Image (cartoon, rainbow, N blue to C red):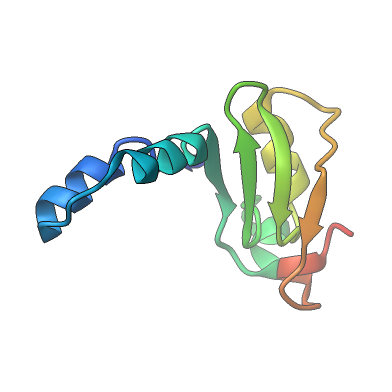
Length: 110
């Protein structure tokens, strides 16, 4: 549970891999992006939360400096508990919620 991804040092690796030159303006923009983490809370179906206690498909965009949830992407069954457990905070309040479609594995905790 809870895989965190960052854009932080990807500029150097990608530019080396593809032979792309990166100017200073691009690096400043990517550095600003890297202050956020995309947390995968679960990839299960609706029933996985019920039968195997695994969160449904959901992601959270977290501000790294404050651990604040900026965006909750899909809020399927078990996703709130998974985020509370990851952040060790039962009082999470996402600023925004995005629901891709109305199935319980994507909107069940609304």
